[in-house]
Image (tube, rainbow, N blue to C red; front, side):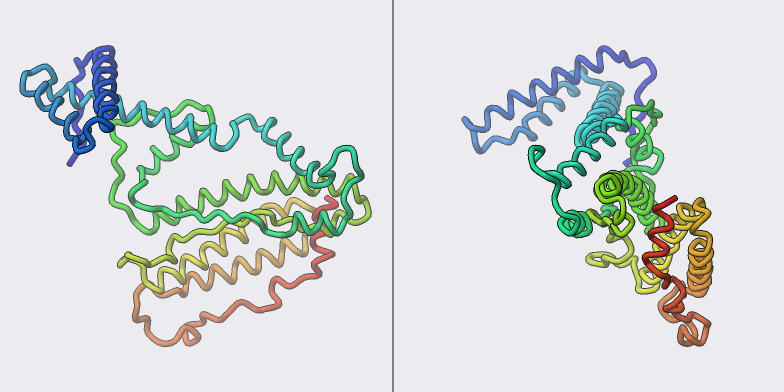
Length: 320
């Protein structure tokens, strides 16, 4: 059912008053459940609204304005809860929290000596949390509305929209939004890793470049979880997996190419990215591609393409 547009003459203050009245009624009816366990608060509030509409106390335009008012209030409340859930939106305060956490890992007891290098390395290089990004249609919003929600949660002005109804959902849109969320998550993990490495550098000036922290990993089900889905074939999974690899290589190349001492590594990453691009171009787009993949040049990446001296690559990048 399409969204009902509110009449331009609807008084916002009257809409707010109607919302308060009905929410209070909902609360009172919900409180009666203990006394009348067979009563349905949802049915009772529906009956109350229907009677008011039958008596012309609530018009269709009033109802449309009420729906929009509650939708926008829920949108603002959700943005505020998101900001609170992640611990606030002050970047400096968040970085300070990460630095404190890294210091606690180094020195659990502030009155005692720091832990040994091997202990710190074991603490920071062991993956302890994994976040899996999904894109369930039940929770979907149009992409611009989702972006506005994130902006509002970050304390920035958000655009207003006539409708929050999502368009038909496509696997491509699901993947793009999940990939964007993972990219943001990677940025956050990089900030945490910066804190972990900074603490290690101050404590072990001769060994900190050996540290490869990986406390959190990110992944996605989008394109791979076919439970209950009929629109995802093996060829989709194959292509999306390669596209995720390409995104990771592009991200890594952008970070490494800025380091003069890592020019050789940046070149090798670029070669790997080009190889993945060729593989994506050769991916089938239907279940019965003509011939075998190797007949179409879909060769696996050279195992040596990204094999470098780990100490040289990691150390030279960190020293810059």
